[in-house]
Each structure stands twice: as C-alpha cells, then as structure tokens.
Image 1 (cartoon, helix red, strand yellow):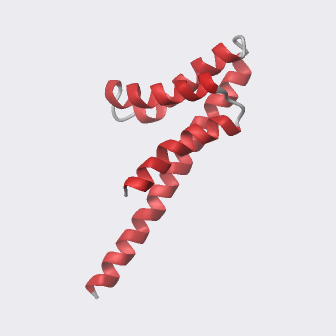
Image 2 (image 1 turned 90 degrees about the horizontal axis):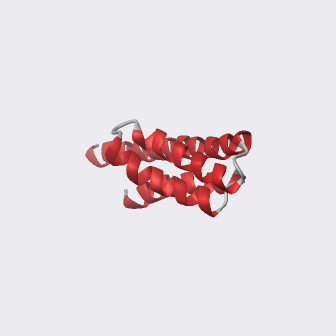
Length: 102
C-alpha cells in the first residue's frame, strides 16, 4: 500500500515532466501536494498540485499562460492516473481477501 501511495504522488510529478514542465514546475507540484493536503482538504490534493505546477510553469516560461496551463493539466492527468492505480489495487486487495475467506 505504501508503494501505491508513493506511485500516486510520483505520477503527478512525472506527468508534469511529460507535459513539458521543468524544475520549477516539479517543485511547484511538490509544494502544491504538501500545502494542498493541509490547507484545503479534501480538494487540496487536486487543486494544490495544479496551482503549484501552474505557478512554477509560469515562472519557467516567462508567463506563457497557455503553456503553463498545459503543464498544470499534466498534474491533473497524473492525479487521474494515480486514482485509477489505487482503484485497481483496491479491487485486487478485495479479490485476494475474498479468495482467502473462501
């Protein structure tokens, strides 16, 4: 379960890099995850990395807002991928538990 949680957060960072983000965007995602969890629960997990990536990308790209939005959208794609990963793992864990019982 700890590996799945790690992969969930890593996917957000990785997807920002895939969508063209650099160091500032990556640090923005990390800061957004940390601040989002504590400042805006439960929606901060989604909004925090998006805003962090957007601000980081805006700084990197000399405030090219369309490029920044594209990079921040990558954090949402990473969040969606992590959510799907956790859902699939949950189904697997339930399947294993049911098989263990019967």
